Amino acid sequence: GGGQQLVAIEHATAQELGERGYVLIPRYEAKAAAGVGTVVHSEQIVDYLAFKETWIREHLGLNPRLLLVLEALGDSMRPTIEDGDILLIDISEQHVRDNSIYVLVFGDELVVKRVERLRDGSVKIKSDNPAYGVETVPPGEVEKLWVVGRVRWSGGRV
Image (tube, rainbow, N blue to C red; front, side, top):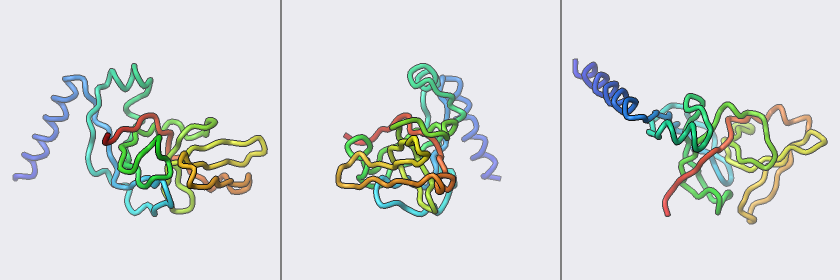
């Protein structure tokens, strides 16, 4: 039927892109809130974005098979990340490095924040926009914090 033709066309296109040196990174429907936080309604892949494999490996130093794309929502990470920016997330980095930006699930909210681990075992979750406060997760609750991955690149409208 027609469905099989469509799959074949999409597959051929992906194969052609691969032959031209591109990798397809899955983009998920869920949006990472850079603000109040949004409930994760779906982790469904909605499409794929093509990136040059050499750029991902050499410029960013990343493995394309360990990446996913989400869209930022809100203004709490402005000016670093704007509302609607595309975020390239390295899911191999699920342990907090000081002052890096991560996508986190805390409770049932998916958020993008700057994260800092303190010596007492607690974690500070900060926004780049000074209009937003700092949240401290005490040592006993850190295990409730799920690090989806580290934001390694963002891009958006100028």
